[in-house]
Image (tube, one colour):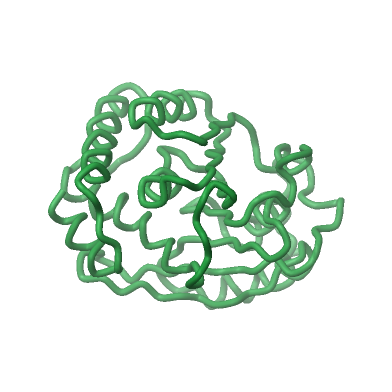
Length: 242
């Protein structure tokens, strides 16, 4: 895990030997399960370290200094797939409470197996859609940090994620490439569901082939009860296009 260790240091994170071992186990289990469940197209040892693990750890750069990342800090990873960025974040900050959300049962089966294998505590794996979870007591406006990586365009994504974010919390979307037009289109959606764009943070790291972007949106007002709309509608009819 040399590429991950050196890249993490450049981001300001010093991984312990036990954390490195957890990433080793993560890689082995990912490749093993990927033979029968479509989890990732990236399987090379060094590429997984860089494009999955290190990329996932970069989300922590969006957090403001001084935030206590302990058991009172509640995180959800929406559309987590193979567990990224949620599980790498949990390995980095083992005390936080984490919810991994995905609608595909085969993927959540892998995640339940993986979290047990890694001996991760305070992790809940849910097989459902964000539109449905955001209607449930205990989840709506309950999270300090909402994460999402390569799930959807921003106008759709903010409707799926911000209803889960508590006021004062933040949603971080991992993106790459040109983002200006996407953020412009998302402005109406962000406002409607109670958010405010705080910043687009650029992550420049030699290990990553392309510049990564962290779109950081603060939750500043309650989300109206009409959002998110029923399953499938945010993607079919993004708020920016109405």
